[in-house]
Length: 79
Image 1 (spheres, rainbow, N blue to C red):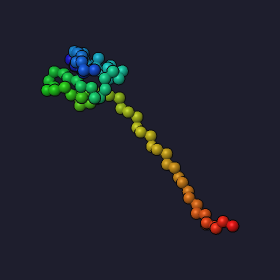
Image 2: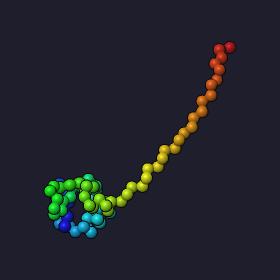
Image 3: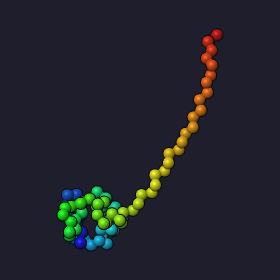
Image 4: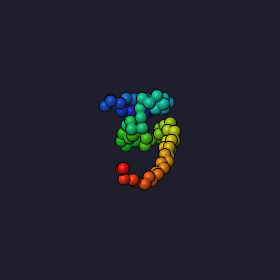
């Protein structure tokens, strides 16, 4: 059974399936403090076995390369 912190409140116990649902629904995030039996302290979710259920973000798109061309124009004195 798991417990999690939300808005300063400790919520639980909830089973692992519920925790995974909370992750999928973005009710809790990787920074949410969680605790389960055997843990010494409340720990960010990202440092627990639950992190394996976190969706992997898509790769960042590469920025487009802009090619600029400069032309030298001889300066002329005004007439």
